[in-house]
Length: 230
Image (tube, rainbow, N blue to C red):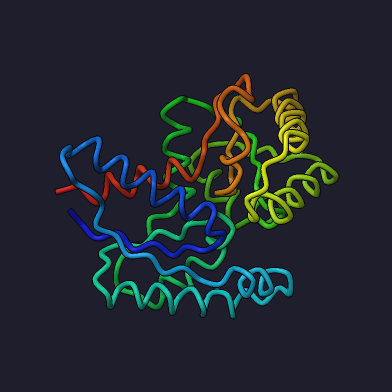
């Protein structure tokens, strides 16, 4: 079993989901008392979020690169960045280590392609929905990405930072998201990427008439695949 290195804390709410999913899957596949060999470096999200807001992506990359380097020195054999947004600085992080990073968008695109979906709706932070670093990675796999309208993007982003990252789950917010998902379907989406690792805490498969691609779950399961690969 390869040792998984997790860069978490962004937010810790979703990092806890990563840990749970990975260990449950290891137990399911190996049985007995087996659990995952993993290392977690949990950052202070207040600091990272401040870098995001101020556009200091270089500083964010430096900070997360240091975290990845610490994981490598501790024995990690590959890295998961437990957030979609901070894959914006994946190259800066990779430059500081000699072990691979399992990219969340690549793992997600693979699952979308398996279902032969060509038009996908994307929900996430405003950085993930509006900037090119994530969408282009999905589109490079032959998938067209559809994002919500500007006002809807603001609602999605606000709920993530003001509620989900703080562990607050509100029915009213779930209804907002369901309406936005329906609008994406009307715009041609055949499936929806839950492109923020907290969204799966709020939105469940029954909330959409098209397939949902929960990036936290997909990323965590792909980590197990790589950990157990001979």
